[in-house]
View 1 (cartoon, rainbow, N blue to C red):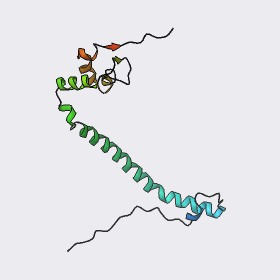
View 2: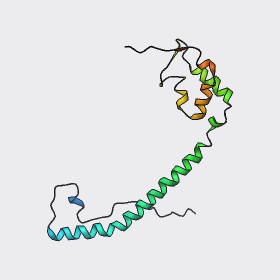
View 3: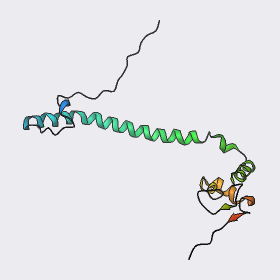
View 4: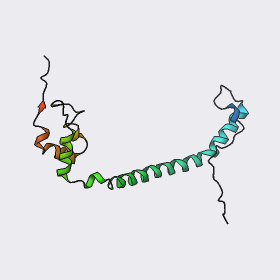
Length: 134
């Protein structure tokens, strides 16, 4: 037998001013007091939710950082990465000194890739350097 669990919906708190929100309505002096009271009653919950959101963000950052350690690319041997880097070079022209293209682009991924790229002579053996215009 399947037992249903209650559904918790996150609905907006109801207010008698609901139909006046996002309009140019100007509340009366009496309504100003009601609005202030309504706002004050919601501030503790707002603070609680803000703290929970901050805890969520911190925990998410920790989990994401640890999740990154599981990435298979971290276990690829440096020799294989160097060969992959060589295959990234253009085949129809010499590589150019441009940070948006290999080999310079590869060195911008992370310090390990930069070290591998620098230590791979074939990446640098046919670089086209354009002299600056004067």
